[in-house]
Length: 160
Image (cartoon, rainbow, N blue to C red; front, side, top):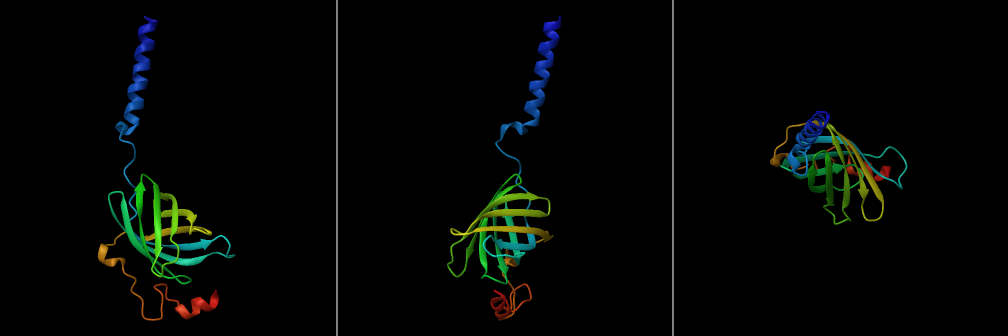
């Protein structure tokens, strides 16, 4: 009788583990990263808190696309994928600089990314400030001579 009890207990554990595994589909649903994110962009060789950055993202399943803009560098087109809370993005500069290739995690409205631009280590620490964005909203709408952050491009260059 003890043997049957042990077998039933072992079977219950196996069934419970199978139920917790999500059916073996290989991954969780992708985190929702749609919206406007603001925070800091940092290159490891530059001292200080980093440059303010805005990242605008739309999402179709696990595929992500968007744009980014900050005061110290040119704008970027962004593409990547999300798997559960893991994210991989490529920031392609519009002036043909080497792209930033980064990966990291999404925890609700907070995203932390790190990687390289081919030469230097880069990182993004950004917080979602809006979760509504459509594909048509991805353009950077700044007045001539101004970044989307409200800082003139000339001032940003002088601060470098």
